Amino acid sequence: MIEVRDLCKTYRVHQRPEGLAAALRSLVHRRYDEVHAVSDLCFRIADGERVGFLGPNGAGKTTTLKMLSGLLHPTRGTLAVDGFTPQRRDEAFLKRVTLVMGQKQQLLWDLPPVETFALNRAVYGIPRAEFDRTLTELTDLLQAGGLVGKPARQLSLGERMKCELIAALLHQPRVLFLDEPTIGLDVSMQATVRGFIRAYNERTGATVLLTSHYMEDVAALCPRVIVIDKGRLLYDGELRALVQRVRPFKRLSIRFAEPPAPEVLARVGEVLSLEGLAAQVRVRGTDVKDAVRDLLGTLAVADLTVEDPPLDEVMRDLFDGNTAARGAA
Amino acid sequence: MLRALRAYPTLLRVGIADMIAYRTEFLIWALTTNMPLVMLAVWNAAVDDGPVGRFGRPQFIAYYLITMIVRLLVSNWVVWEITMSIRHGTLATRLMRPLHPLWAWSAEQLAAVPMRLVLVAPVVVALVHAAGSELTRDPALLAIFALSLVGAWLVQFFLMVALGLASFWIESSFGLFEVWMGVNAVLGGYLVPLELLPEWLRSSTGWLPFRFLLSFPVETAMGLHPVDVALGDLGIQWAYVAVSAAATLALWRAGLRRFAAFGG
Image (cartoon, rainbow over all chains, first blue to last red; front, side, top):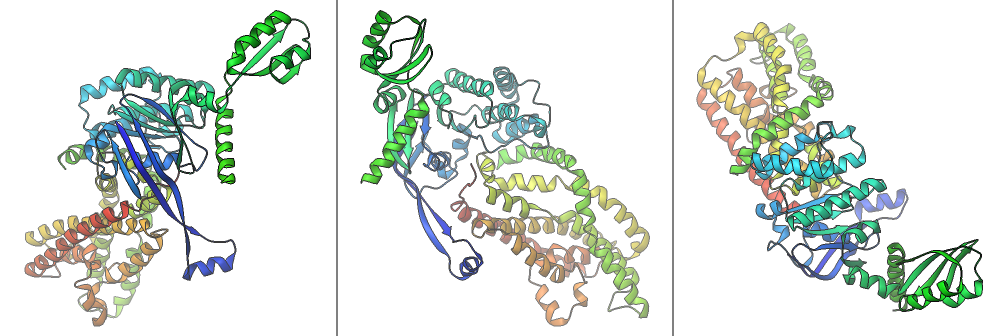
């Protein structure tokens, strides 16, 4: 469905120091730096996959998504999305994909979303019966029936994102490029959007490539992740395997019935915190079974949960490790 | 092309709805098209001592009121729209739709015409009342006038799109637009009827595009030229339609490769 080979994108960026003298100098002589936003990126995504596209700010995620959706021309390399070369912007290609950007909107600001939907129906040439059916399905899934008649500017951020998603999916695209679709939304709305994307993917078999800084989005939606940093591929594979590779530890959260003996806790693993009757202990994944048996056998445990390390921490470790490796090199 | 034409009525309908939402700003903007009235006041005083060339008081009244009408009908703000969408990256949302943005921009600008007609109506009434005798009654010239209005709209649209697309290469097109407006005011006949310009300046207006955006329709409505001359000018105007459309499409293709889709 999506194939990316040796993809590169280089921007030419005007550089100027601060101050009036520098401003005047830049009138006659401009200095440009080349910024390699994406370098030799390769990956493939199969039909119907949900893939998280991760990386720190400036990693090249959005640039890659924009190349995949045909907005940017690659400097080098090849791209194919559903058999099309995106930058050619064939009509058939544009009818098969959608790009949702959490920080951009396609809704007409002063008009109710229904007007944007009508515009999209005309532009995408959606037959009336199909349009009505899809619109009903999407508004039901997002519980957005009461919103579509209000001017877009009077909708809350979350309500607007619901309507953005409807506008983006009315033509039933086969490929969804989602760039921070939950940015700025509250926790409940994030969950709604995540549920909706998952339902759409499962119902239609559409391929989803998602960038998000909210790791809950990725954990809930994407069995596979592609991680890039400074435009280069760092990891491509299962999310679970990434977590095990970067942070091969589990976190035990324990509540005791009576104060525990600190030396027993220390024997089990690294004590992250111990406050009163509550403790957190970090244990290597392979040692979890023994640690739990030890704790239950020797201490008065009232409650115990085993958790993966937070994905945010995994990512931080991954990027810090990458930075350190580059520094060493 | 066929689907764009099928979508066009919806684009126009939504554009009109959007225009109605912006009606107050639109009316305030329309009031800025008052320069012809200022110039009319100036020339009205000047002709106390007798006509200037072929222009006496009735001719000046007709000229500036028709200028106002043509200006209201053919001008557009697409250069702002395009410049801002390139600078802020919002062009991306248009590019994701399977419809060339030129269609959408043209519909948005055409959607303003019905509301502009509301403003034009009282000016037409004033024109007929004050200087109706200066309007041509020749059916051939009236037909050429109608076509010249369409031609003027199209040339103005394509040239303003081309100016806006310059934002692919430079930071902003607004400076270019200001220069254009200054030159256009003189060489397009907005300030002074072209035949009253000094010969050295007037001679350049025959082939430059400015005259065909404003003065040519006005001259035709006043019957200042015989039909054969007006027809020749109409041919030049429509050649400008073709050239400006081709140049705009070429600029679009070249510029799109430079689009950085900034923001987000």
